[in-house]
Every structure is written in structure tokens, then in C-alpha cells.
Image (cartoon, rainbow over all chains, first blue to last red; front, side):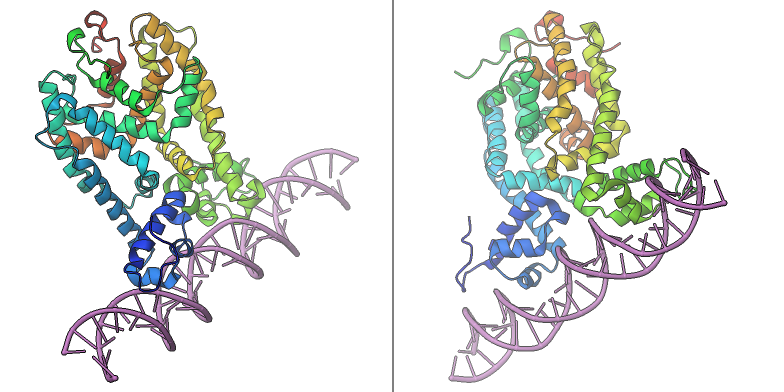
Length: 211
Length: 211
DNA sequence: GTCAATGTTGATCATCTGATCAGTCCGTGA
DNA sequence: TCACGGACTGATCAGATGATCAACATTGAC
């Protein structure tokens, strides 16, 4: 959290602007946000945004790069190539959820970016993460921990999709469960359910619930 | 596709406007779309939009209601309360995917609506669908066709989330599979994989791939 | 201390956008 | 036939918005 209304020789008004832009963009999207909103939120003049980032597109792109880099750094360090497959898939899944949970603005920004379309570096961004994660799952498949009736990449996609949906659709989930009088599980319990879904399904090797 | 440049006593310019609005809103979202764009796309004057719908919000809401009603009608008729559980879950899942596949504009509009936040009737909208679908899954669970280690509502949510992700993230999916040199399955094959995921997992009752 | 480069502001511009409104056109019912 | 109401248009308005620019402040190199 950067200080607002920075003392003059603040090292980096630039960072304050980026932080403000993340906040405003994530709430209203590209077209809904205004340069004035962002400037006010950052506590600087509007002209300064153009001085540092050229135009609105430039600012949007910088915000996107910042978020991608931050996310990658946070998640990738948990996906060590030499980790034992025993608990590593669960650990990675929990870390993945934790990031988006702790950075709801970044989460929404990515949804906006998906729709706004101005994101052709998307695959480039996820490439390095895939190259770390997929072998992890392959090893877990080889160890009999993860079902091997589908490619490792698909397992990864399924886990990622469900975590994302879990985070942005609590309302729908609550509603669907309410039909039978159930209540949504906790975040950790949900991860356990996911791991059970993709766990090896021959009776014996079935995943035991965590303690 | 409504005729552009309608002859004067055209029964319904109103519908032409709604169709145009679906198109334009789905591409650019609420703030990105302009009343002029929509008017031009519909082949009418801009003033007419305000005459029929009051303001931009009014038009946005009408479009939302139109899409929701259309979707419900399309999907719900496949979910007969008296259907046998044998193939009904698969049929419903295929129909669900088919709708969004055939109506990509409606699909994108719903994503926009999720982000724009102007949608508190969302749960109301999905309620009737839940009340039809959940019992369907419960019966399939009782018949030993669907895994019963999680509530029926959660099975529904998981299937829905994966179909949606499947539709809007083909790029990510292709990338993740490319790591191991795999290619994405067809739509139908993907549905089969999903049913295998949530299928009862005791060796015997396992779901056999379709023909 | 001087000076150039960079950071920063506030005012201003041109354009876009949602909304309004007077007025025209057409069908309909008395 | 006439009058009325609704559909529709085209021009126009007021406000918002992205961008520009001249002027001032600050920093750091020499």
C-alpha cells in the first residue's frame, strides 16, 4: 500500500500511479476508468500520467505487465522442479488460490483483460508457468497420485479453471448448494475436493482427506 | 440477422435495436459501446434508442433480460424432471455447451455483466435452472452414475465452470497441452472427460466412453 | 553555484458521448 | 375527413474525457 499524497521528493510517483491504476482499472475496466480518477487516487496531477506512460493504453499495458510478473514470481517459487510429487500438487494449488485471494484487484483486472481483448501476450505470459507445472503433474501421475486417463496439461487446466470459478462465483455456488440445503465448503476443503477429483481413481490409491 | 435500413412501417425496429445492442455490447462492454454504434448497427437513428429504452442503462438491462430468458428456455427444456438419469446428465451438459457455443455474443455479454457489477438479479436468474438441475444430479448419484462424495450442487457448479472455461480459454488450454505435445480434444470428447471426472469412481460403475 | 535534464502542475483544447427536443410521418378511430 | 398518438429523424446541447503544453520545481553532474 503506497502512501497517498506523497511528500514531494517521493522516489516514485510512478509506482503510486501504477497502484492507483490497478485499483481503478480493476473496478471499472479500461473504458470505465478515467485518467482523472486514477490521478486523483494516486494523488498526482493528470498530466503526470501522460508524462510517465504516454497515454491510457500505455498505462493499461504497464499495469498488466506488473500484475503478470508479480503473479509469476509469487506462484512459480512454489513450483520447484525437484519437489517430491507427494504433496507438491496440493501445495501449488493452494498457492495459486492464495494469490488471487490476496490480490482481488489483480484477479478482476485479468478478467477485464480477457474481455478487452488487448492481450495478445497472454500465451507468452502463461508459457513459463505451464512449463513448470505440467511436468510436476506428470510426475504425480507416474507416482500414481493423479489420474492418468487425461493429459497432464488438461489436469492443470481443470484445476486452474475450478479455482478461478470458485473465487469469482461464490454467489452461484452458494445458490446451487442451497437447493439441497448444503453450505459451501471452506477454501481448503474445496482444494481437497479438487484433488480428489483429479486423484487416481483406482480404489486403493485414493487420496486420503488431509488429517 | 435483422434487415438494416428498414422500410418505414417495419413492425419492430425495437428488436433490431436489441439485436444490434447484443452485438455491440458483447464486443466492447457497457462503457466501451456507444449509443451511436448501436444505432448505426441497427440502421436507425440514435434518438430512437432513447425513445424506446430511455437511456443506456435501460437498453443494457433489456438486453440482459432477453439473453437470460433465451438461455433458460433453450437449456431448461432439455432438463425434464422425469428424465431417466442414465444419459440425462450428459445430454444436459452437451446442451449447455451447445447454447454458449451457438451464442458467443450472449456468452461474452454475460462475462461483461459479471464484471460490470450491474447485476443483482443474477441469482434470481439461475435459481430456476438450479432447481431443475440439482435433483437430476441427485438421482444420478442415487443410481450410482455420479460420484456421491460431494453435494449435487457442487457437481453442477464444477461441470458448469469447466464448460465455460473450455469455451472462453481455448488458447490457454492449447498452450498447456502443447507442453507435452498433446492436442485439445473435441467438444464432445471434452464432455466425456468431464463426465468421467464426476462419474462414480468405484472401478465397476465407471463410465464407459460413448460408443 | 550553474545548468541541463527530468519531474510535476494547472489550464486548456478538441473530440466524443449520452441525452434532449422540435418537428415530420404514419396508422387509427371517431 | 380530421385529429390524435406513437414511431422516427436530425440537429443540437452540456458535460465528460484523453491529450497537450507552457511554466515551474527539483535533482544531480560538473
